[in-house]
Length: 249
Length: 249
DNA sequence: CGTTTGATTGACACGAGTCAACACCAGTGG
DNA sequence: CCACTGGTGTTGACTCGTGTCAATCAAACG
Image 1: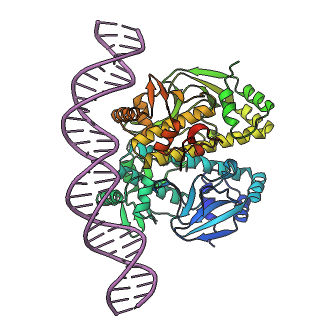
Image 2: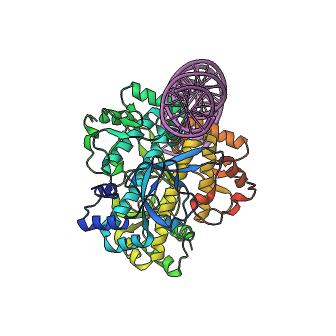
């Protein structure tokens, strides 16, 4: 039953109406998958990837390290996300991608991409859309880092992850796996590990977040969204689900 | 002699070899220009733009305002930059664009873009490239905001602007116009106006930056680059010019 | 001239970083 | 079976970068 490419299809369905044939095409080009253990790099800075890759299972992230050894996580990749859709144009990766949890990655050969291009304009449009949504996410992060205090930043991150996991069909309720260590969370938010710890506890104490091991629950998503100014529109996923329940603006 | 589209051509030349015919095509589609006064919005959040727009003169920026009225500047647009190349896919702008200084903007009708697509694959490739470089800039900013103290952030901003102005042929030396108010700089860097002032003075005192009115000079670009960890590679402009002169790493 | 916008300065408060110690757990090997 | 290990999470004390508030100054402008 389970099909590696499902999250991708679920995600794309938010932008275009996929025909049955399109789904078949996608399954076909992304047939070859690879497993990667947590902590391993999937693509490294400087190389020109030979494949186009899609994450099909697990958590991964884009990151860079500065000269002083500090690491910054530039984005979090969830099932259905492409990593290197367009490196062909730039010629090389200017950042690396690594597995946060154990992952499964589909590798699509260049030629297969080309054939996709010829055979399904709908898919191509969906690819474009995915790229542009990534851009929108970057803009939102920029906003986050620049203008919101750490507590809201972190809450915003949780909201985004939940919304994206819902979008790719990985999660239905308001509980989701969250394999990042606190150090990694610090690298995402640009704050120290110690501070991550304290901020997280603050959110828990306020009842906005529940943590059990490496899982997170947002008992009242709409409340959290309000707290941190999360507005799912930037993800361009269409109808927003339960995010706006108590919206009173 | 002066041609509105020159900065665009200069910029594109970094990614592909443009034929004379390509330049002609560009001049043709971007013939229609519009002047915008400093402070005026050029495209506003929520609309679906009717044209594709390129900045041909002046400084502009993408921005959003939060509910609490705070404004964040998401990117700075310089001559040769597109604002809304791909909104057609997403359907609407999720941020606004406003003129920082007096600007000139070229407006390219949709159909003209389509014809470009058919007539010059080189130009299309260059457009892709421009989009992806924008992405790279966002990643770099994310790095900046997250991991560098304000002084280095600001220095990095100056380096980036100078490099980009050089790339589009607007500047040859190491002095350039910089029309941002300190408040706007704060909105870019995510710090308060007061702090902008102090940080700027710090850079000046260290001799890294010279300011005369609304112009900035970096007397020793390589030194500034070293100070803030600026590495022009992410702009994908090819040979780096004088940035690495004293590079000793 | 007042008025306004932007730049500058000082005093003070607070968020976040740093350093250091300790707790907890899973894995490993004796 | 138990000590040892390394990675992660937790906590406290202290420092420092940045924000906030408020006043003043300078230049531009009607």
